[in-house]
Amino acid sequence: MIDNRTATPLLTDGPFVESKEYLSGFWIIDAPDLDVALALAADGSRCCNRKVELRPFLGS
Image 1 (cartoon, rainbow, N blue to C red):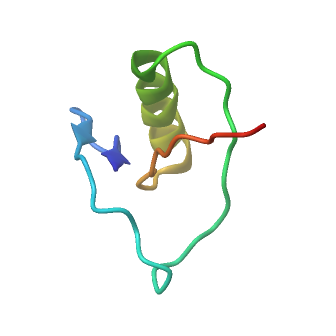
Image 2 (tube, rainbow, N blue to C red):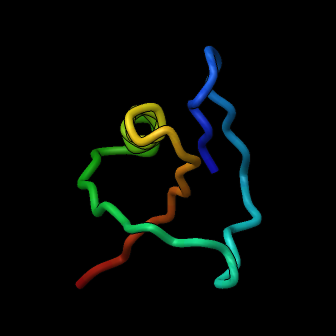
């Protein structure tokens, strides 16, 4: 979970949001590694003023 609504981003590892939580949408990003994905998720959290959950997407 990434929460970048304050001056310092807060990164926590799991547990993931349960289905009873509110889901407002999702982004699929193509990042070369986890560090880039975390940076993009932190920017998204700041822009939408919400917590962001980052999960790997294993497509075919």
